[in-house]
Length: 321
Image (cartoon, rainbow, N blue to C red):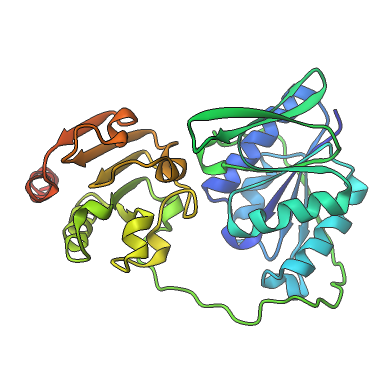
């Protein structure tokens, strides 16, 4: 197999997604040989290049000019121009918004094949095969990507990070003129956020439709602050306007993989499980003993959350004293 290239966006730095993408690239490289390249789009976050140089064989940075802020058309054109001379057999991206948008169009530009939301990528008989969820998470499907390069965005935060190679990669700065684009982002709005991003949280306390309204989320926020966690929600709670859309975890929301995911009054529909099923430990509180979430959790309490959450907050507060 030819080389593997991972594509990272500088503004995210070496977050868990970037570490997972590099780890997937390393494992694929070990299976098929070749070199592992990293292409960084946009100005790298502080410390990113130094951390990345210990994990890959070569780094190409394209961060000047208009690339300082992501633009879909320009980014796509630059990536196609950078990747063509590298001739990678596989191109891996993470599960951030930019990567999901770029992946299928990049595969078309390079004449390859694409796949979304892979949980594993490997080689079998010289062919690239990627695994992803099917039937709402009830099964796994394995796809063979026949056209090269295989351009895949992976569920990176759930993958093991890369390991230092003992070498320092060469770093190259590339300046590529961006073509005039007919489609551009003309305005960006960022929601103020306290603490780490939900995708980076080690512990998440998440609430669902069973809470009955926005007020109970205040109790969940208190519990979350007690243990240094972030607060999330199901789509039903977000659609009802109880919490901001940025809290949504699930198939159409954010994909998270914390060390602990505490699901409060969440039934556990397959769409929600697709967003948090890779959590290391799942705990749930629900009044319905037959709720699907209990089939996927390590610890479960069949009880009204109004009895459990205050008591849990009190006990955890005492333990932290």
